[in-house]
Length: 424
Image 1 (tube, rainbow, N blue to C red):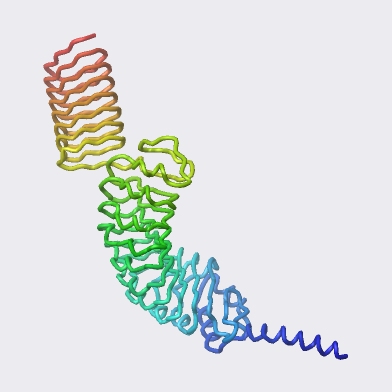
Image 2: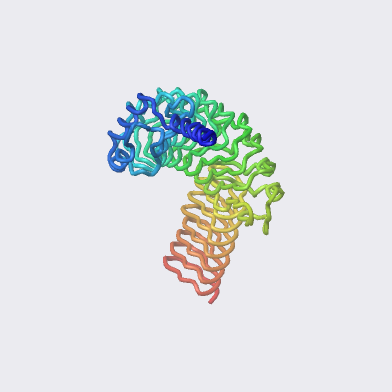
């Protein structure tokens, strides 16, 4: 008999805390019922699942084991529709984590959301939320994780990140955010991931000083309209593993300090206006295997994308080498490589293949497969298309239109007047 009583006491001791853990504060119960009651779509199923009064045992709900207060609400991908029920959420006074991503919420962020002072993690990605981001976002001072990506937010980023010093993950990619980068991003000393790609952000990238971010491991500003040179403050981010700045308007050279980032595994700076060669220091990075040291090098362990940078120069006697270069409204430039383009330039010298000169004059081109329009150009080798006047063309298989051109070689197609043709 004594053994039976002992077993019963042990069973009660096991069950009572569990029952207590599933108890629910009346305010939280009321708030959760109001939350589900204002939702469409998957809200119907949620209301059916959330039955009874023990809300701490409901799907997606987590409670503090001692107080019984709701601290976690995780409902990603539940097919929930409609505006976010802010008034109901405000009733969850002890809420610390809110995950409502991959639903179909619409409208702007509810003002009541900013009253949840204890919130540490907020994830609302992949919804249909709209409007501008409120400066009240800075009131959520305990946030460590913020993800508002893949929505339809617009306008400028509020300059409130100096109040969010605990953030270690910030993602707002794939929205319609515009304007310049807020300088207060520089205050995020605990940040490890920063993702603002695929927006319409503009202005100097150097508005953010990365020197105070020793834990930063990933930066993605790709597909924006950011300008300026690569910020030297990134050189202080020794923990950086991934740097993605593709598809912007960055200028200058690829700096040598990138080769000193020992933890870097992914670098994508393609489709900018960078000039020069890839620094040799990049080939010395740990875990790196390279088959070629030229622009467009292929790394087996680290995808380095630099090949498609377009060099854009204006009114300067610059010298370019590499491929896919562009000169717009410049003079006195010298280009070598392939697939170069000169638009409205003067006195340019190009060598290589597949170069294009549009509306330029006094250009000297060697190689093959060039397209040239303008006047007083000197073109040699094969398979060119030349339009304009007073050009000198030599080689074979060229097509020439215009007047006062001098053509030598063979197998040309010539139209216009006053040609001097030598060769077969």
